[in-house]
Image (cartoon, rainbow, N blue to C red):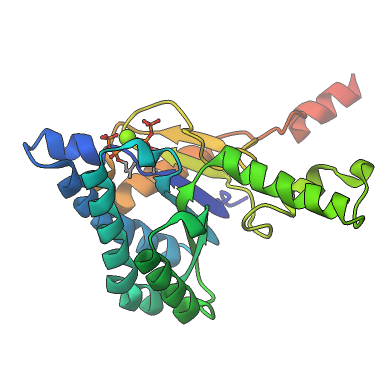
Length: 245
Ligand code: IPE
Ligand code: IPE
Ligand code: MG
C-alpha cells in the first residue's frame, strides 16, 4: 500500500519575530521573510496535489500586539494578496479564508475579495488563510447561527448534533486537517481550528517559519505517514487478533 498523503495540512506559522530578533532586525522583517516560506510551501502543496493548505496568518488574539506591528502586518498581508496573484494562478491555487473577515481593515478585505474572486475557478490546492481567526470564536459564530435558526423555528434543540455544528463553521465543506504543523517549537495550538483538529496528527518543529521550505514540509509528511491513526478504535490487525481470541 502506498503511503497516504494528507488531504488537508494546517500550519501554525510561528517564529517570525524570533528569526528577525536573532539577526538584530525588527520583528516585521521576520514576517516579510515568512512570505517566501508561504510561497514555497504553497507551490509544493500544489505540486503534491494536497487538497487544502490552511495557514494561520493572524489570530484573533494577535490584536494584543503593539499597534505598529499590527499595522505593518496588515500592510504586508495586503501586499501579499496583490503580489502573489500570478503565483496562485500559475499553480492553479484557489485562495479562501476563515476568520472574522469583517474585523479586518477595509483595504485588506478588498484585496482579499479580489484575489478570492480571481482564483475561484482554480481546481488545484485550496489555500485557506486564517485571518482574524480564533477557534473558539468560530464555534461561537456557529452557535449563534444555530440559536437564530432555533428562534426562527427552523430547527429544534434536539436536532443540534455534531454535524449541525460542523455545517455552520466558516468553511463547512473543508476536510478536517490530517496534519497540523507548528514551526518555532512551541507545543501548543493557540486557538487554531479547535473543532476540526480533534483527530489531527500534530508535528512540531524548532525550525522558524522564515526558514521553512519544501524539504521541511517533506519531513513532516514522512513523519505523518508513519503514524497509526486509530480515532479511538483499534487498527485492523489488532482488531482481527482480538476478534480471533
Ligand atoms: C508568527 O510569528 C506570525 C504571527 C503571529 C503573525 P511571531 O510574530 O509570533 O514570531 P515569534 O513567535 O514572536 O517568534
Ligand atoms: C499563533 O502564533 C498565531 C499565528 C501563527 C498567526 P502566536 O505567536 O500568536 O501564538 P502564541 O502567542 O505563542 O500562543
Ligand atoms: Mg509567536
